[in-house]
Length: 251
Image 1 (tube, rainbow, N blue to C red):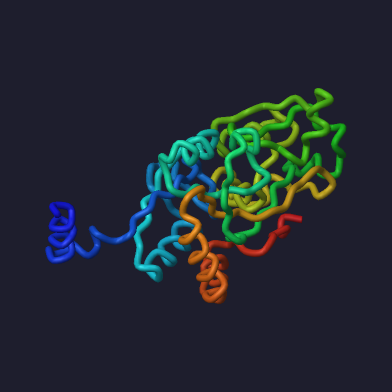
Image 2: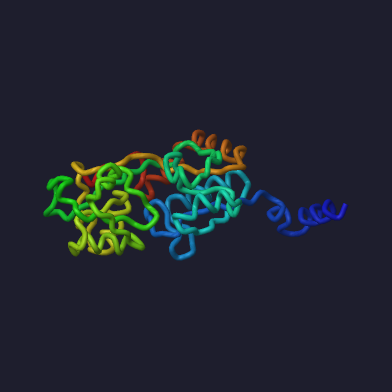
């Protein structure tokens, strides 16, 4: 009885309808991954923020965004510390899922992760790469078979700025990173997007970022329908942030 009265008061009081509405927490990566997304400052921003806010407004719900270290994303969902995580992919961190079932949205945006080198090393081939840099928490899947042989040696960095600075200064031979993110970071760090070159002759991977959940399959289905019915608007948001269907423009 008390719970019903409290619920009624929440609806009747000013702002109560909002308080009584659906509210969900999305776990997001606490890194600078613009133009796709960023939460390294504690505030979630970029393409994904605009997209999820647009869906939430259309669905009459609210999203809170919880920045998390990349290695803790799956664990946080398994522990029900968040309702969703983004970005996710069925092929990522399979061991960390402990056999639990995850539900994935349809693709939100496509990506290309590729190997970057200094322009003077473009076309030198994979044997030239003895030291490969990545950001902590990321797995260079396209290099996996070579890494198992012991060459190249993997060098982890705390963030993309450190990673690209290491490559630019020659302390590593190549960096494995998202093409659009590397272009944005190069623009900021070195004043030009092509300061580092994407080498199409070196390992790369293409895929899609998805939203995932363990429990909220109904909302996930609503999100999928919204992506389909509002495809023109979704594409406009992608283009506004410089992301879209798989981009190989650094080629």
